[in-house]
Length: 165
Image (cartoon, rainbow, N blue to C red; front, top):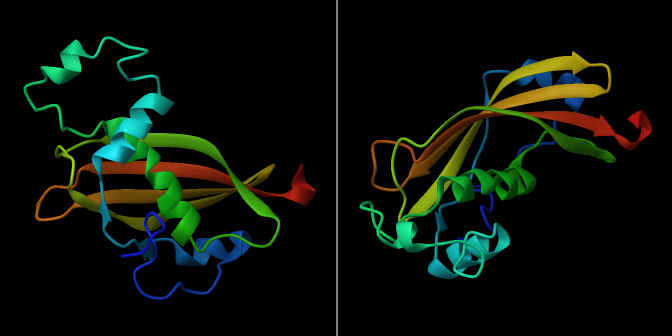
């Protein structure tokens, strides 16, 4: 495991230019290393989203029948960001991605403190856009020792370059 969230398992594949990404539709882009979800990170997320005792009534969370060590699904969604930042091979110097759509988000299995998760990302669509290239990935966050994933989501990013602004 690395010190960076969701470091790459194995070697990074060569960079894929956004204009050429359509040739890779259907391919797995990356699988991350396993990441442990410690209490400290969950608490930081709660503070950052105002879902903590100082900003929200947490009584319902603490009496949740699933347990108070359940990791919030929105935290799992937010973990897609470092997974892609650290592993997605689509891009070129001077390019950047803008969130365009997040669809079909599901949470099939609960995650608890101390569990390990990883992301498997598959390229599902590439489409030209007047301001760049729309890149859609299917993301499955696997939960170690579980037959069901803990997150499934289709994420579309508009890849632009500084010159396209």
